[in-house]
Amino acid sequence: MKKEIIISAALNEVRIAITESGELAELFIEIPDKERLVGNIYMGRVGKVIQGMNAAFVDIGISQDGFLHFSDVDTSIEDSFITEEEDDEEDESLTETSDSSSGVARKKPSKAKKKPASKPLPTFSTKRSGVVSIGLQPKQNIIVQIVREAYSSKGVRVSTRVSLPGRYVVLMPFESAIGVSRKIQSVRERKRLRQLARSILPEGFGCIIRTASQDKSESELRRDWEYLLDVWKEVEKNIKKSHNNPSLVYQDKNLTGSVIRDLFTTDVERVSVDSKKLYQEIINYLNWASPELVDKVELYLGRKPIFDAFRLEKIIADTYSRKIGLPSGGSIVLDQTEAMFVVDVNSGRASSDHEQERNSLKTNMEAVRTIAQQLRLRDAAGIVLIDFIDMNQEENRKKIFNEMRHELMRDRAKTTVYPLTQLGLMQITRQRIRQNITERLSDNCPTCHGVGRVKSRSVILNGIERWLDNFRIESHEFSIILFVHPSMAEYLLEGSISRLSRLMIKHFVKIKLQQTDILSPDEFQFYSQKQQRDITQDFQ
Image (cartoon, rainbow, N blue to C red; front, side, top):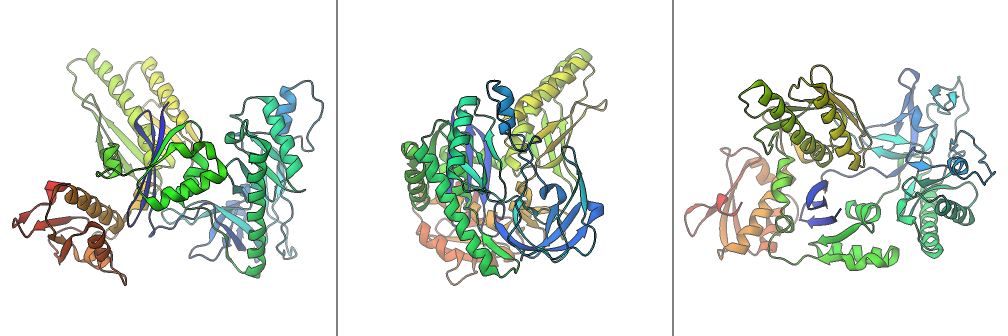
């Protein structure tokens, strides 16, 4: 499968697309207005501990307390990693066993001060360890890491299982276990990596060895470990400086840095980026971390916007659409509710019962592939409910179920698919980490007060900039009029050097700004002074 990473940097956003065999598979968007928090580490202070919810709320110094579920306090190695016990079972020639037969990675005591327990500790029931006590008390100081962004009215989710991701390994300062990616199938290689980890890591530190570490030399892996240990030393210094006050003590890499670190592996054939600054940052990082991948990175210098050149802009536009057409004439309609993500599959035409069954199966199969793609692109999470077209034959219903499971195997988020019900409904659960694309790229509508959604002003600005890209390529005019809603005009004029000024400087064009209530908040129009007409559609 041919994989590529395409990076587009504009004034107000960075967009990263990952393609698989030429088709858009994943889309990441970073907007300054919506700060990225996942991966950040904080000194926190426990607020309420609610046994009935199996959770506590932690003040981490931001506007809303973090949500700490008890399962994120007493945790174990993820199922996606292989513990030493499993390797020992696979290799019968070895008799060595791990200290923990259950595979549970115990958390070493935090250096933060704990308030003496004045009442019984809360408890939590786990499948592996039964009922365990959770060492949380109100006003207790703890170190936590954000593992899920805030969404809707819910705050960020945090965990005491702190980790620092590197190129080849993930350092776990409060764990003693060493896990290896299940994608490394060789038992001998897993044991080599685990022995190497033991020889490098200080006592009391654990790690997860990533797939990218397979067959890497000791010097390459040692460099990654030592770098992460140095980062942790800086975190500890920041913890001391916090004086136990809720505050940020470690900020993870920006979007581009984290994608290159985590997803740019040997199976990626090319990385294309249209920003000289980001290009140099990527090259500098790879020269240190993976010099063999440097030649795969290219600076895009084409005249067309990079996403247009790779034919991605139209596909990305579908991620903002409520309705998406299918090849056979059917369509899917996607809606976001407070509790779930809902998809309705609509059929094309059929003239007989026999043709209806065949047409329903064909449309449903097309819908499966489109829905799986849209779940990844939109980062839909939680409960997903799909209303497929009714089919009478059980064999066809099983085909839809198996096809959906197959399509979602490529999804990096954890998903669970359930068979179709008698009503033709399929239920899917998908891991939530970030806000979905609707939450990230839209604001509450000032007219309906949040009942509906409109594109955020930053997204509208990006649309204006893409229009100017096309205008500058095809036109020789240097003076135009821009009509926008007053709220958008205010946004364009903000700052000591306004966004409007930066647009004019970058695209070498004079723009006269006009406010109008006739346009909706997410619309804009360009008017040519030379031609005395609306030219918006000419350069969309």
